[in-house]
Image 1 (cartoon, rainbow, N blue to C red):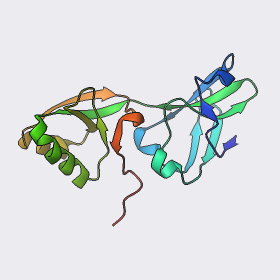
Image 2: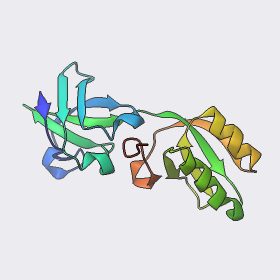
Image 3: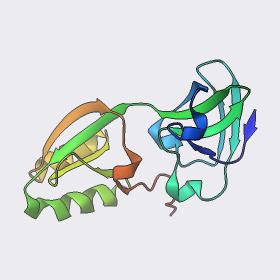
Length: 155
């Protein structure tokens, strides 16, 4: 099946009483326009999305399409991340260093917490500047994104 746009969210009323077949995506794939995937139910899915995807990205729960009585829903897989906490005076430095690495950055669970995909050199650097860093496996929440420059940067 070939889909060209997101048709809604899996929790929309229009999709109640319809079975769900998940299509798994790694966090770094969500800003790509073209995909060939196999759903968990073994259906071949092709996506050719418009340019809006380059800035918005796919979101957990997006409905890619419908086939008979099944909807195909985006599932963003958990990944290893750095959970960064620091005193408020270090936050600009942390944001600068993550931005300088062109890495994605997300708000954490509190005002002084940030999340970025795991990268060992970044972990070492952040610890050297005085941040507290821990490694966890979590599902990144695009709604909490500060910067996600996966496909937008070129030299």
